[in-house]
Length: 428
Image (cartoon, rainbow, N blue to C red; front, side, top):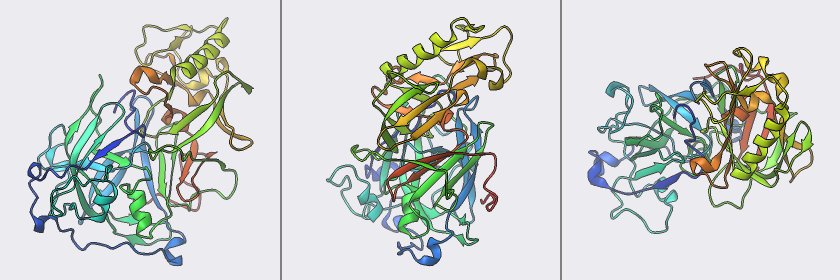
């Protein structure tokens, strides 16, 4: 969602309801997937050079989100989707008909006898409870996904072709299950997003990544490189990962939620340790900004504010862009104008030696349309996150972030996200 978006934040809830009367395509014949592709075992041929790469559009400010264009169907139709590493299920706005949709009807996804049934293996794998919500196996598999900002999507699972060009030159058209959302709920003071849906990058069986992996088409690895200038790229598979320079930290396995989380971490200010310690953090590309629990947030604010004493910056309380902003003697045009006032931060992950996530001023500040500089680290308590700590887009910019579900580790390396490495080009 536009502005301060915390859409994903990893405690997404899926409910599979089996409410057949809601959806018009509910007969047994209508529910049969067309030319279903059974999962295949990976082979050496498709394990080598098999990544799918997508160009990313968007920015942290003023848009507040990053998107990719995904082709769906045969013949294919293009949908722009908000990329979200904090949730699993991919969904598009659905012509079923649709409530709360923001796209014109001719830009909605229209099902065509391809609804997923309750008897489908994927539907049964992603039920949250042991009891089946379906009264009959030939009912449709409905879903409801709820986001941390109280937005939601209700719909039905469908399966359709998603054409992808891989880095080894081959073109594949796997059938992938995703949500066809016919009832969307948006929250907050800002306008609903202009995107057609959400691309969930999480690791559950419902995600596109997991489905591609189960088909033997890519490794169970996803990554993104978001440019601070806007744009970037996203990839499924491990072909784009540099052979050196990547810093890795283990994923936390204690949580029952399938989040890309790690820790504990300690905050460093200008290279020195602070009293902000023991943070478990979630990496969430569905969040525009970074959120800390109230104690950690106050610690960061105290460090920054105290360091600014005696500078030419004063509080800009009239700027509504973010909670804490400063103004100079004249409007700022870019972050280059203010870098000298602010110290670098970093998160030091203590489970492995010398593992730090650098947070230079560009990774926690924005310049607003009013010419002020604002702190892009926010108080999670004020938006209902309680003790969760979220590393959002602002702090993920100009780094390649890699979520390796096979080795259960998260990695990053500073990168020029404005273009792909030389041996690759954009695929769509």
